Image (tube, rainbow, N blue to C red; front, side):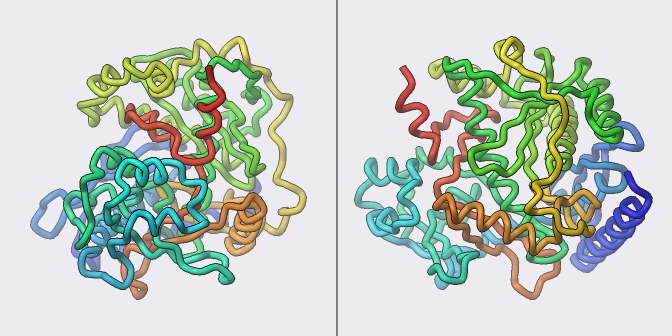
Length: 438
């Protein structure tokens, strides 16, 4: 890593740490850490407490050096503000209200939201709580988007007029695209990259565990840049086996990679993924998330995982996607000679900024080609060309530092939540994959 880039990284991290510590201190909050990993690639579990010492939320942080600490603090703030924003929805009629489900699905922007159309067919007479999602393309109008899909606490904070008879669909509640940052553009970039990443992983899981058996493109770890080779070695030591690095870039063309153990270990479903206009950063995200995932499962935090996996046995495809057994993939891998560089059309000067994706980490040198605004513009243009307009909903007040928001791209797939052993089916554009499966 160049000396100048390293200096920029340290400066950005110091500023981010100062900001988030100030935000938490002003709210009277304190943080405790449980850590693992090497000094270069630590992983932290953060517990956030109120002034009385009560636990408010927990988070995980990952990245290089101090980036992991700042990542954990930003994610803790994100969790706290997302929950507070959900609790405030019942009193915010301007931005959250019940809408007849027929009116919701009649919005042309939702034509690709297959799960929501299934819900409307099953419950044609309900009123459905919706968020007023603001367009990222100023030429588009606001969108009324079903609140439960991005509000996992909707049972606890029902919006007046909402008819929760559709409760079987609440398994699709998912915080996909929810992110924070030092500024709103940074949070938007995090959220955009996450929805792209989750869409890519959703398609990859179907590629891997349907019976189509396509060839898969993997990276040769020996040909990674030196810092990524060290990170790969760290993941190998953590997992007890070298991780596979599989290219999961979708038809959108935004680089995305997945990292998973090369042999089954004690914790099923261990996986990491990342997307970025810079392929190297996407790989870094995937590897650090893999280490984080392994650490989290080793803590025994998810006490119901085994029972949920057992419940998936009635749906063999879903069980395979949740267990993520690497064995069926090994004879289908083709190892590429090298990691591609940033896309030439995006090769603007790199500036320090927040590293994209959830949980939202702090500024880092490897943000990707161009500044935050240039990256957002590139991603939005890519999505618009594919007929996938993007929207957002902010959870904390506009005057708050460190905005927390959710990016929504109707039609992008969220089936990737199945890797948490949740019995879900494709929600958007991947539905056609199952329709053609015999």
